Image (cartoon, rainbow, N blue to C red; front, side, top):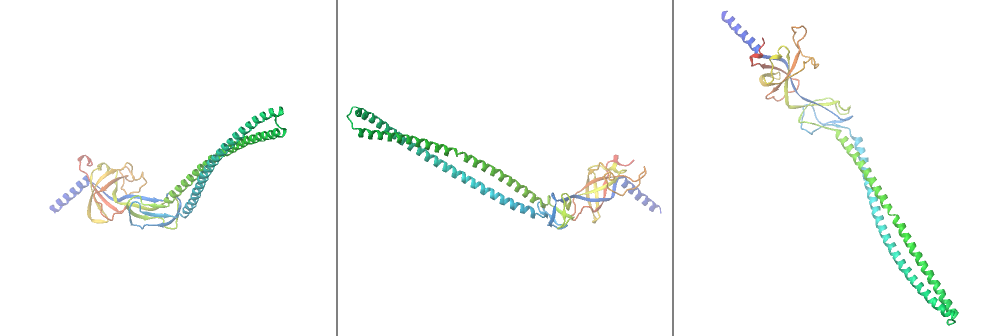
Length: 354
C-alpha cells in the first residue's frame, strides 16, 4: 500500500509538473491557404474543367464561362477592321493616282504654255515684220510707185498677222488659266490625306474594341493562380454566377499549419518560437513537431469564431486566443479542417504559473 501510494503520488506530481510546464489544446485544427475562385464578370458556367481533389498547376484551366456573345462581337469587329483596311488601301491608291495624274497634267500644261508662248512670239515677230513692210509699201504707194492692189494685199496680210499674234497671246493666257485651275485641284490630295487619317483613327478605335473584347474573352476562362488542389466545387455547368461569387475552393497542399485556440489563462506561457508536439486525428500513432509562429491579437469571440471553453474565475466563459503553429514535415493527405491536439512545451521558468 505504501509503495502504491508513493507511486501514485509520484505520478500525480509528474502530471502536475508536466501540466505546469506544458500548454495543451485538444481542439486544434489543420488550416491551409484556401483560395475562393470566382469570376470577374457575370455569366453562365459553360463547364468545370476539374474535379474535387484534383491537383492543378498554375495556369491550368479551371472554369469556362459562356463566351458565344463575345466571339460574335469579335467576328463583327474583325469584319469592320477588314473593311477599314480596304477603305484605307482605296484612299491611298486614289491619292497616288490623283498625285500622278496631277503631276502629269501640270507637265502637260507647262508644255502647252511653252508652246503657246513660242507660237505667240513667232506671231508677234511676223506681225512686226509685216507692219514694217507695210509702212515701207505705204511710202511707195503714197509716192505713186506702188499699185493700189499690191498695197491693199500687204495691208490685209499685216492685219491677218496682227490677228494671229493676238490669238496666240490669248492661247497663252488660256493655257496659263488651265494650269492654275489644275493646280487648284492639288487640295484634293490634302482632303484624301485627311480621310486617310480619319480612317486610321477609326481603325485604331476598332482595334481597341477588339483588345477589350479579347480581354473580356480571357475573363471567361478562369485559370488556377497557384499549383494546388481542388478542395470543393460550389457551382456547376449551366448555373449563372455573378462576379465575386465563389465557384470553387483551391488550396496549396504544401502549405499547412495548426491553429489552436488557447485559454486566456494559459496564454501567458506561450511564446513565439516555442517547440510544439502535434497529434493528428488522421494519424493516431504518429507524433509531429512544430513551432509557435504567431500569437493572435484578438480573441476568437472578437473574430466571431465559436470555440469550446471552460468557466472563468470572473464568471462566464473563458476567452480563447488563436495561436498559429507550423508543421515541420506535413504528412501527405492533410486537409484543412482536420482535428489535431497540440502540446506546447514551456522552457523558461518565468513562464511557469505562480
